[in-house]
Structures are given as C-alpha cells and as structure tokens.
Length: 435
Image (cartoon, rainbow, N blue to C red; front, side, top):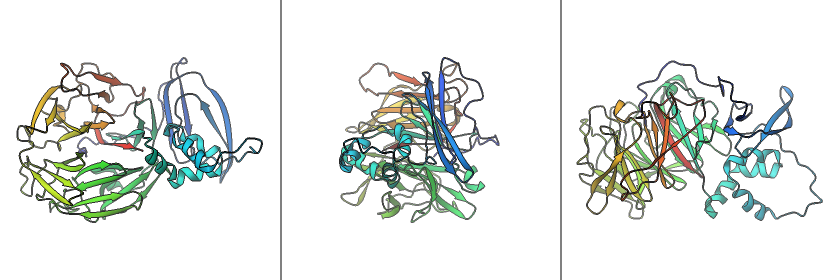
C-alpha cells in the first residue's frame, strides 16, 4: 500500500505517445474496444496484417504489427476457424501443453486462431496447466500518481499494457488502496462511498469484477502471495476506528476468502511476506498508534501464529513513516530502510540485520511512501525517484533490479528502461503477478 498523499487532479495519460518516435525505432500498438493495449519499445520495422470483425458499430478492421515484441489484448477480435483439414491434427491435450509454454506476452494472438483456443484462455484452464508444468512468467502491475489507470509491465519493462478502466466510484478512485496478486487475479481493496470493497482484475478475461468482499473488510493491512493463494492480516475496519488482528486467505479458483486464526497482536500499517513456508506479518502500529517492532509468522500446517519479538529492534522508525519496505528473494528477507536508503538482509540465525549498501532510489524523500520494493523472481525490484542528479528514466520513475549477494563488496543495480512515456516516480500501488 502506498499512501495517496500526492494525488493531483491531472488528466490520465490515455495517449500512447505525445511525441513522435524516432523513425528508426518503431513502436507497435494494438488497441481494442476495451481500451486495452500493449506497447513495445525499440522494435524493428514491422510487417502489418489486418484482422476484420463485425461489431455493433459495423464492420471494423484491426491492424496488428508483427515483431518479436508483445502486442496487447485482442479480446474483441473474432476467432477465425480456418480449414486445416490437410494438416495432421494434434490431440487437444498435447496442443494445450504446447500452448501453455508460449510466453503470456503472445497470448493476444490466440483469439484469432480458433474458438477452442479462445475458450481455453478465457476459462483459465491454460493458466492451471502452466502451474502444473512449472511454467511461470512475471508481470508488474503499477498505479502511479497523476494517472487514472493501472498499467501492466512485463518483467524486463520492455512492454506495457493499459488495463481497462476500473469501474469504481470516485471515493475509491482517489482514496488509499492496497493491492495484491493471487494466481491470475489482481486484487484491489479500498473504500467506496458505501464502505470497504474489493475489486479484482482477471487476467483471463481482461476485465474488472467486484468482490468477493473479505470476511472482515479492512484497510492498511499486510498481504503476501504464495503460489495461487494470497494472505491478508491486520489493518483497520472501514470506519478506521478498530485495529484488527484477524487474517484471511484468498483462493482465486473459488473466488472466496477463508478465515484464518487471529494473530497475537492487533496491528495496522504492517507489511507481509512469505518465507520458510510461512506468512510473516512485520511491524506496524497498535491500537494506541505505538510502533510495533515484533513480527508474527503463520504456519498453515500447524494452523497457528508464532510471535517473533524485536524483529525490527534496530530499525529507526520516523513519524508518519510508510509500512516496512520488505521483499523475499531466494527465501531470504530484505528490507529497504527509508531514512538511509540502505538495503538490509535479515540473518535468520542471529535474528539481526546486515547492511548491504545503498539503493538507487530516494526512499527517504517521502519517508518510504511512493516507493515500490518487491521481489521479482530471483531479483529485487525497486521503483521510485532516482538518487542520481539525472534520473535514468528522465522525469519519470526510475526502475532498477538487483540480484542480491550478501558476500559481494558492492551491489550491482541494473537500470531498466520503459520507453519515453513513463509513469510518475511516486508509486501508489505495485504488485507482482506470477502466472
């Protein structure tokens, strides 16, 4: 959760580019009636083909550009069942296994193949097969200050896709929100006029759906993902009066929440992660607003919480500081300390923190708010305002990844580019989906 303290009444950036690209660096764009598209940067010259469809407004034609990059959703394109009777047919089972190994960035092409493959994607069955055979692909979902839309980036930030507009009321749109991913669902929790609600974006259908609401609706809570499931704990009620110690688990297959045992300590503004096959809830504040330096770990096998005292004993906590910035890579816990911009590693045996070096973004400028600090496979991902005089990404967000090494003398942060149309460097929400 990233505090919406810098929300500005700016127009959303619906245009792909306000500046004409260099002729030698072609961009490609596919857009459909759901206002969803992929943009790929620095692509070679491309050949084009047209796909026509019949819509409510009459016959329409889509121009797609062929290249090695990804183009966006084509949910409005009708499948074309051509006659392939002269080609030896594969069994559906074998065909599904082949399709499951195709990168998700290529799934936009599936609707124009045939109706069976279109149905396979939209049913979610293809993503279940991917989980079963161990095929995973990361996407990063971001909502930034000054933008009205959520954006999805591929792991290398080489392409991005604008999600359909979220059909929530103005209270939800401009209020603080928490986000998490479970399987192929992006879950957004926030307040509407009538109270706390949950919206979910489903990757298969490229649509937003309302609900299901949590058993105990909450804000300012901790969350973490594990495989296809997501966990939430703590936070405050919709009125903001009561601090919670309840916890829940979300199952995207059943689209339902399961009540979990309660934590030992009520806490809000806390952070969560999954490590050692346990759901950790770290830090936060209690009912009186006092800082909590303890943590708790939920063991699903034992159905019980373990209290971990003084886990943040040495961490300086400033007034109005963000929830702890934590991420787990290769089952090791890392923390970004906002006051010093230092990356730290939690040493499990001694239960102390080891300082590894500075990060290349300014977490200190807003006491940790507006910075995304996430695990991205076997790397750490950090997004925010650059610490350098001139940001690698110009006036927009600076994006870096790092493969942390506790024995290295210096951390090697790799800057990532995301095209000329960047989002604001103040990140309100960021979640990583692995599917």
